[in-house]
Picture (cartoon, rainbow, N blue to C red):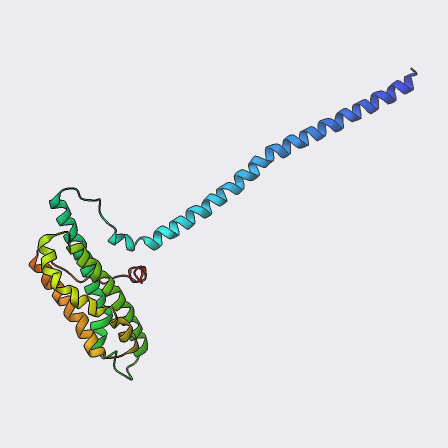
Amino acid sequence: MPVTMRRLVLAVTLCCALVAGTAGCGAEEHSASSPQANTQAHPKSVDDQAMAQMQAEANQAEAQEMRAEPTPTSSAEKQKFAKTRFVVNAGLAAGATYQWIVKPFRAGKFKKGADGRRLSLVKAGLAGVFTYNRLKAALDNAKGDPTLAKAVAPLEEGLDKLKDLPNQLRKGDNTDDIVNNFDSLISDVKDAGKSAGAEVQDKVPSAGQLQSTQ
């Protein structure tokens, strides 16, 4: 084969080798860069999930004040647990009743023509629903302690009468009688609890707690 032809063949062979090598390196670089791209995208996704969970946990933080304690085993533990839950629920009911029903009523906020009357009545209606639900839970809790259960048993009928009152209160109907019904039942619950060794203190619920039971 002539020298010129051999040189030409050699040059073509070298060019092919260079092209193949470049392509291989490119593929390796692409392969190596892919995990990096995935690695960059992955933490972002995890961050999003973590943030979503943190936000959800933050929204539930207030409601966790009412979470159940570890399940009691002995009879004495069950009775103590029942009293504790009764006090918590009844206290929240009492706090809501005073803060958004009794207090504004005494301040004249429910009277026709009063400044902010509509808003006050709406809040009172929401507080009434909350109070009913918490009192219902409290009376259920009381069943775990014989003495407490006996003390609150006569209050079941009074609680049933509260069920439809929040809607009437929201509309501004018969506010005097409705407020008196709520206030009287709260007083009776406190007296019953005290007689059974479960003294109730007012605890104003947060906005989150109010929404959690609507």
